[in-house]
Amino acid sequence: MCAGLSAGGAAASSQYELLRLDGHQVKWGTPAAGTGSTVTFALVSRPVHSDDARNCRDMQSMDALRRASGIDAAALDAALRAAFDLWEGVADIRFRRVEMPAKADILIGAQSVPRGVAFADVAYHRTSDEAGFRSIRRALVCLNPEKRWMDGFDGDPKTYDLRYAIAHEIGHAIGLDHPGPSGELMSFRYEERFRELQAGDVAGAVGLYGPSRRPGIAAGPRPAAVVEGSAARVATGCASAERSATALSAGERC
Ligand SMILES: [Zn+2]
Image (cartoon, rainbow, N blue to C red; front, side, top):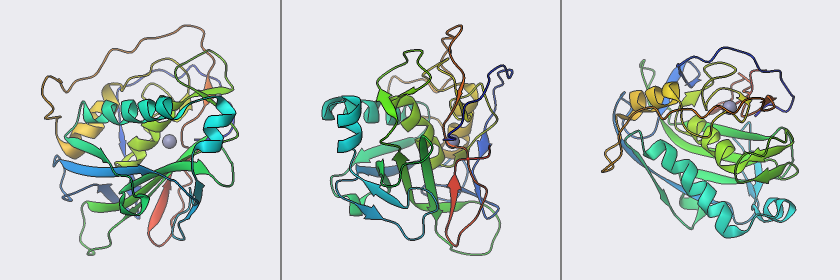
């Protein structure tokens, strides 16, 4: 997420952008478009340092963030599950929680050095020089514990919806980038206009993993509930397009 504020007004468009690391598109599992995968995730329970990360290099548990925002553990768990369910509901990617952070594919925590709003960091397997997809080997998602968080929208530009921010960062963690400033959940502006995936988000996830196989869930865009007059603020993950040996930050391009 970017830290600054931004005026709204850009036209909504249904589009997506695939994350590219060192020029490679990346996804979990088989490095081919439209193939499903199962990914594990865990909440950080104690300080974690990731030497190869550009974003989220130092993370800690969400306890302080929860306390500061008055969010109990059950509410955090519910927001987390709801965020993963958004993606699982449309694409053939399943997320399984594990308790040991060391064994998780996606690690989620609070930033030890607060900045911005939230970030993701993605690293991939360097298997060959051939063109095409690379398999993601780990992803980090970190939230700024000094921001004010809640479940849902409240029209206050200084409070952030936990589910929305986590879902946006998960989008990076599964291989999506920002399609533009506005109109999709993966857009980099945080505007409180909708809480669901938009058509471009769905198309991107389905392009990477194929349609969801979960019974009773149709892979299709959900209608956006537009709330007039909501504050436009920047948000979720502007990505610095800088590269490191194994990871590119999914985020800021502001
Ligand atoms: Zn982002």
